[in-house]
Length: 160
Image (cartoon, rainbow, N blue to C red; front, side, top):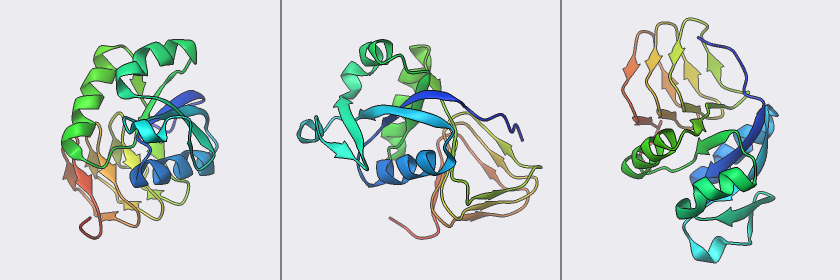
């Protein structure tokens, strides 16, 4: 597993419940500065999510990324189809999609994590597991040895 930590400015894309846990994971890890939240709910514009300002919508993402000088994004959308579409748009535009790893997650050094993977608080990823790009492992989920989660999969201990 690549252990290099991201250091830089990031937008969190998604200001709902999933956005909250991603923001919490980023703040807990202390690896980056969150420049703002991007969310399509117009009522959230100018509000804050866990102290982070909502600065614009997905349609404005790329122009805002330049003006806020962000290094990339953390995708915080719980709906797989929408998250997958955003992942593609962000990549085509040349922005990075960063991994989000909560510091309480337990990840084997023999696991492989793709780009944009999100592993939330209390999760376990065991040896030989492979998580493809844009995979989300939700709070307290466990991925046992030699498991493979394909591109954009979401794994939760309970249905949501």
